Length: 204
Image (cartoon, rainbow, N blue to C red; front, side, top):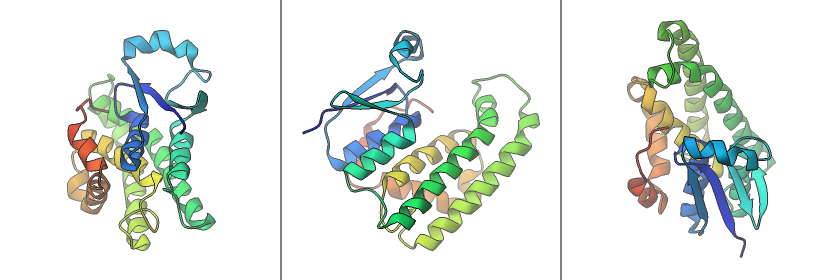
């Protein structure tokens, strides 16, 4: 049996999808967390200078998407065929592009950075509308309630992204109720629900 160790901050962020998958699969793992202050000492041990990374019997996988996709492969949480997997990958890449565009607004809105929120708001609103409209259409077309024909690693990844967006997007729930319903559907899955209800509320 492989030994898994997830290394990330004591926050949801880009490490949380992996945690959801571990709990969903009923797989034991070491959840190594640290504070921002501790990261300054830990960072030199990261070969890429970034986190998260997953260790599987001591072998490291860096990057939130690669490690989450790997876990999806290991635990059977992937698409039915190559085309479905490609569509799922495309949705996640599009989400990551959206985050790059809206992050300046998120940081200012949450008080993590100083700046003129009105200056970054147009880019936020444009990226938000583009991605959430696209995602709504993808969910409608899938017919399963998930991104593909069933629950996959990408749903765990995106559900956490939506959870983060709700922290700084005051109108997401009213403007895109189906997106919020999708997030809640993922968080209601067996074992994921139990974990989500008990996890600490530590923001992003």
